[in-house]
Image 1 (cartoon, rainbow, N blue to C red):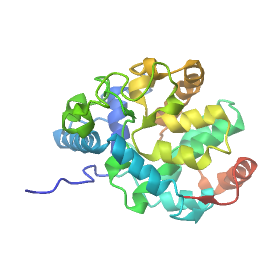
Image 2 (cartoon, rainbow, N blue to C red):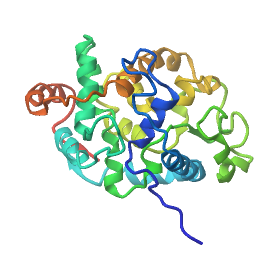
Image 3 (tube, helix red, strand yellow):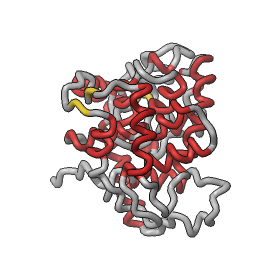
Image 4 (cartoon, rainbow, N blue to C red):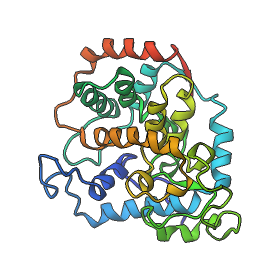
Length: 287
């Protein structure tokens, strides 16, 4: 039997293109049909294959194993800018509208936030939010780095993209995890809930001691679409989660809709961001 391809997407950001199909910007200047027009059935097939793998293998035990491995933070010591340069080896060649590397996407996000006059820590969050994708440069398959995130340890919501693929996940029929609450209690708070493994949780764990709580919510939950777009897990959230998810909702349009064909001038912007990074983060971080 042929082994499944662990990296079915042509690039790791192709799942974000699928997000724009699912959640188009109602205010976008270009018509939906003209902006990121994905009519190729092969492209849709790769996204389906990606989520089939993601939903099959993202189990509670898998998440625990990845936490044990990566939250030891012993892979590489880097400054934020070194990590950005490292991440810059990833280029989203699946985007039909623009050809931007990872740094340019992050700068477009952060510059859009800065233009709207938000606090500097919010601007920094825009620059950092995808930095956890360095996981793929440590050998992780795409389905363990990107994709919509969701709780593990309880029943998978039918509001998650491609919910039918969860039937192959061992937790789907495990009585410990197959009930609505699973191992959790009503309104226990998301801090008590394990999320599927990927770049969101990884980066959150790296910077959780340095940034304001709204920034940490943005980083940790910006891919949790079944909640902040569908409200599927209200029963796990407490009052603090509901308050801080306002920031997640404020952040996501900058992430999804800030891409533009004119690349930012990274060289000119670097001094500003170096000062901003130094204000909140240590010189080097352990990844």
